[in-house]
Image (cartoon, rainbow, N blue to C red; front, side, top):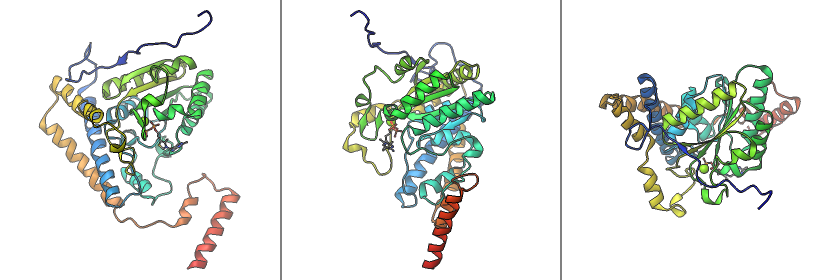
Length: 359
Ligand SMILES: Cc1ncc(C[n+]2csc(CCOP(=O)(O)OP(=O)(O)O)c2C)c(N)n1
Ligand SMILES: [Mg+2]
């Protein structure tokens, strides 16, 4: 039909560097042995700590926890490609990103317990707080990226969003703004195939999330989200482009949420068991282990060392949050602004007076 743009059909190539059997796809990626073992250890630490968070919630120690099991490669690979000065805007499932950034899991534990109202060290590590409202933080990321351009500080901002978040108006606005202003921003979508109980197929009519980049006028990349080296490579490329003034990139990391949406969810009520079983065979940590074996870097000591270090983190998390006392309700006012506004101070005084009255 004249004048009608046909919807782009077919698949965008899925970028992958390691095959499921651990052999490189094409040229062997040029990653140093130290970095490979560090990636492995960090993914194992993420997996193990994630299990500890879930256990603690089950024991009544945490209010809630959203597991990132299965998404370790997508998270660790992307975060490892960035500089510590780049600003990160997480959703809520990004434990692997937080570990790479050096954010203390104990602080995260307090947050999910409800015993910390701020001050977990996010800001100090150029990481915005968790965003429970879906998609709002994509706009904040674009703002931070535009600020980097104005300050000429070479910074890149990264919005970590989910497949479900791509249906939010805020994310559309963020993508368009970033494209129009050529903001040094990466939209890193972890397509884990589910938004609570809504499957990916009910989320979009485009052939893929990466396709949507065409409409905004930015590069779109589809990467195997269970291949840590591919995630690292595509994020590094997008960051280099952004830093060089090339504007934003939309990355779709195709992965899977192995666990429940959160500890309040029961996925067996809506998710086919065969689908889960299929994705369990594509485990990202197993895949990297096989590649390490291909490179002659694999050993039982490496695995045991990674588990031992992860066990230390698990113990530390337990020690920090187990039976932690409730904080003063007044702490809720402490981390709202760098300096409290008069209205906030008045509210704090009002609550303090009420608490004093109750004794
Ligand atoms: C603005 C807004 N709408 C709805 C919700 C309820 N909600 C919480 S998580 C979620 C699904 C998000 O899915 P996705 O972006 O794919 O992230 P995932 O949980 O899969 O990591 C929804 C709809 C919310 N938190 N915020
Ligand atoms: Mg999702």
